[in-house]
Amino acid sequence: MRTLIANGTIVTAADTTPADVLIEGEAVTLIGRDLAKVAGKVDRTIDAKGRYLLPGGIDVHTHLDMPFGGSTSADDFESGTVAAACGGTTTVVDFAIQPQGGTLAEGLAQWHQKAEGKAAIDYGFHMIVRQVTAATLAEMDRLVKHEGVTSFKLFTAYPGVFMVDDASIFKALQKTGENGGLICMHAENGGVIDVLVAQALAAGHTEPRWHGLTRPARLEAEATNRVIALAEVAHVPVYIVHLSASEALLEVREARDRGVAAFAETCPQYLFLSHENYEEPGFEGAKYVMSPPLRPKGNERGLWQGLRQDDLQLVATDHCPFCMKDQKELGRNDFSKIPNGAPGLETRMSLLWDGGVRQKQLSLQRFVQLVSAAPAKMFGLYPKKGTIAVGSDADIVVFDPEKKQTLSAKSLHMKVDYNPYEGRTVQGVPETVLSRGEVVYEGGRYVGKKGRGRFLRRAAREE
Image (cartoon, rainbow, N blue to C red; front, top):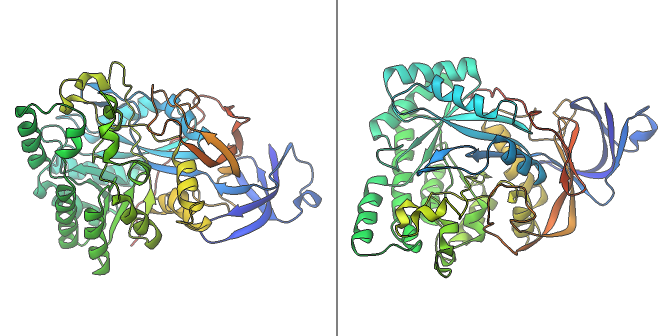
């Protein structure tokens, strides 16, 4: 299959260039002006006049088909990756989970089974580590060297479920110094949070807003400082996931100023929503129960500054949706039982374009860096993914910067009965999306096929 995308403007993290793109099979083979004159016979021409050609988005933080909090996230690998494609994301990196008392290999096998035959776009895995033993550390080597799983997530939160102690975190960090992996940290002080939750419930506070009130920003900052200190002593990089609080960002910034390899992501919910959403009438605040929680209005200004100045390296989603009916309702009389998580996979690109590029918070190139190039480089996928270049996978979004879309659970493809941004109108949406040269989204609908996504073996970190 030979496809010509004509008359568009290519935007990468480095520059903006009016050009045509010739795709043969799954890869980009030629970039230049007036390629129709030299390309020879093509099977399809896509006219991209007035449109930007963006590298396909890469979301490195999703939780598809994930058991958590007495329920399972509403999107599986079929519905979640279809939604991703419709929103301009052509690669996801999801989190496989080590079973309690089991091995990393067992967890990885489970997630391969969840994705096989379902994923609509390409995907990779991080591995969530629940117990750090000598056997676990040896398995980390094997996953990096032989399985293409080169990043591992550990938690300072959720005692009894995911939380590990500082010594375990330190051992895992040291192991990545040997094998070239990367430790991703959920940084909140879980022990103290559990005390605050118990005290709030004992005082009769059961409403969703208490989820945010019992997870103060200071405890995110404290845990962020602590895990960065451990990485600094281990002389290895560390990556903070879903950073929500400006106080935690300050810890990252100060470490980076000292020359520490501290990296962090934030998510759209922390840029566009706030603690005020928890105050919505009745049980509506449950829609926004996620961890870390939404922060007070004004906090987002520090995050936008961090995105502009590269104190925050990228924007992911932490997509982990639970329906209000039958799932979020589990915590109607006890906020601590509301499944933590919200949908975001399909709306990330348009939200960040509308609130970032259009509001002049971000340049075109910085936008591409945050949603595609930096994720690819950070997690061993570049330059196969994350750019538009000869030889790269033809993951391309034909993006209409003028078209408007009103976000609604009814019109989006995520399998969840609400949307956190319901009724918000964004300007700038994907018009056509190609994954490895195949058109998977056009005319407002998914046109690809279930199971066409491939598992991506990611490269280890290079010193």
